[in-house]
Image (tube, rainbow, N blue to C red; front, top):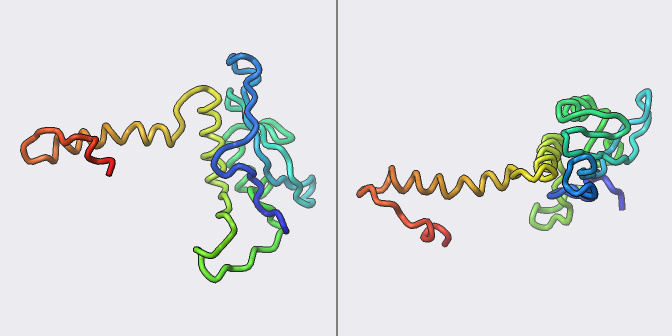
Amino acid sequence: MIVSQAIACAHDMAGTDVSDGGRGENRRGWCHIWRRGQLGGDYYLDDLVVFADDAITCGERTDLTGLARRLGSGRWAVTNPETPPLPDAPSKWESRYGEPLTPQGVLLEVADRIEVLNQRPTAEQRCWDAVPRFLMRLSHSDHPTGTAVSISNCHD
């Protein structure tokens, strides 16, 4: 089997270290990423380490902007560009392969990991927190009598 998915953690970055008791120096997450060797050589699997202070390392220190630049240039990749594509399944429903994470997806995962390391809400948590406020606004502005519709009725 050919491994072409670099990010071993599509929904959550693996390996979080909080050994400093929450001060932030050792708060980090990591995942795998494909990195091109010097002078345009072959790609190899390497650790992408994300720190609570927004620093990112993978052989060199950078930040989210630098990560985006490296992914865009092809120096770092979320899948091995040298791996041939998987054959198309007869249908998406019958496919046994996960959807590959895109460079934009990796950037969002890394940004979320930085939020987690700093004990702040992730994008998903902020969206879920916004749902009740949105429903309350809808119930007040759109209900004909102006009375609030119970949010508990929206769970079904």
